[in-house]
Image 1: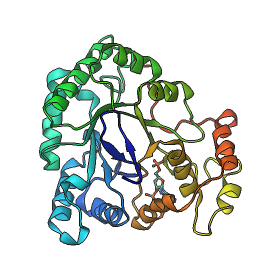
Image 2: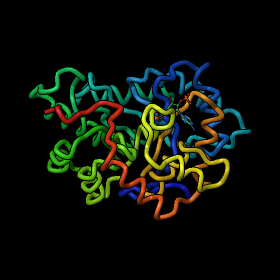
Image 3: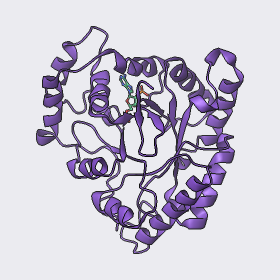
Image 4: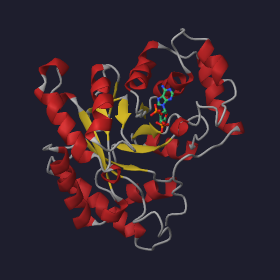
Length: 296
Ligand code: A2P
């Protein structure tokens, strides 16, 4: 299908998804989720730690019951992620069952290990490596049982991923990590490419800081002015990822900006502008989210 990427198991993932971090209640989420569906988004990204799976479950139930949306369960792609505190075989297995129940679903399209560590503080815990491998084995089991249709990882460094590849039975279908012109991470990009692991960028807008003036990417304003009037710097950053073949999950609390981000399909960046954005990280490096490179 259009606007989707083929994963190494033959299934497709929508290239554009809606991130939901920091939106918790039905009241906050329903306007943006319903706008996203009406704007053509078919992927919703959540996580145990976002504490909004139950609210999303309620909203999804309403959407499936309302024929005007013209979407059924099979048309949507739902991602959730394992909380670091539930690393380990039994805890991970149960965490997925609990996510399924909160979301009121009988399968989840993609489940990721959210973070390579067992907590955000015990960085050098010697059990981190065996814990995350045990979690991954639970995901492989859930995949074989059909409860999870794709499995993957998030925030892994090259070292974490290489260890996983050396020990897994099922190569992860996807890796989600912070990726934008100011944080390029070529080593991990290459490793994913070599193993057919789909890349999904988070913080494409640097938590908003790449477009609100906090960090000014040289040339971005000029690039966006070269495209059709409605285009914004936000859409240019999203389009840059899409043209690389990376999936994106921009989030917004504003239905209007959710709709704007779906105009990523309306522009095509020239190869010159792609090159300009590709070079930004050589001069401007910024990480806005967690750095997992200290995790054993
Ligand atoms: P808001 O919720 O006020 O729209 P990221 O996905 O990189 O973490 O960025 C998300 C942030 O970017 C949110 O704070 C969101 O703020 C902002 N944002 C999302 N889409 C747009 C847009 N099209 N224009 C401006 N800001 C946006």
